[in-house]
Length: 196
Image (tube, rainbow, N blue to C red; front, side, top):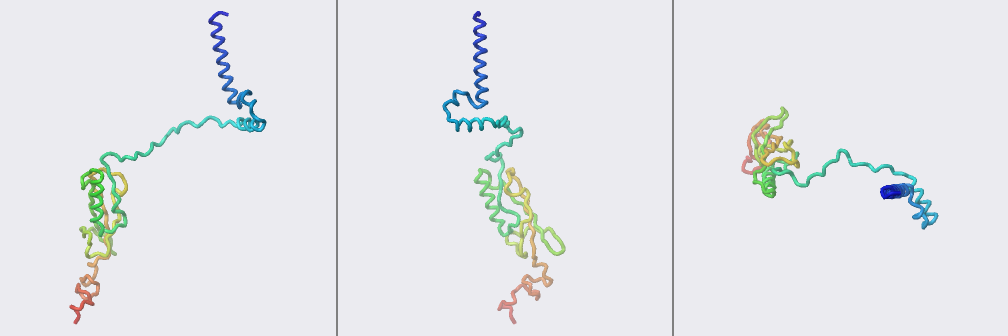
């Protein structure tokens, strides 16, 4: 054999050893490794090697990206007011939003609230001016809608539309008094200054 034939034969031999070793591992190992095992170990080894788990699953073809813990630049969010909040707390909402803006290094007016206020009566819903946080003349004024909604990322400078419905208007009193006693006066009937 010449030098070329010997090196080719050596390569083929090495390849046979490598491939044979891979086949022996897949079939449960070589006899040399099994020689030192007890018969109990050998049977458990052969039973576990008989079940072929098949190919490992590949990567997910549509992986979902991990959520970014850092919000997009130039965005913020708010948590107050929420649907059902009372208009009495409007000053607190605005203060909290201004504080939140400052905490994120934005101007205090990075978000503003704009109020659409309605009076709800038996006859329907009528747009009214914002009665303010004291909402004199109404029994209650509650938030019924917010756009964009709270706890969502929104661009700095967004105006949040707050829809409020006020109910129990004292103006519904047929006598024009605010105390509901029906005598046309605003004073309480138990007021000692107005008693005859």
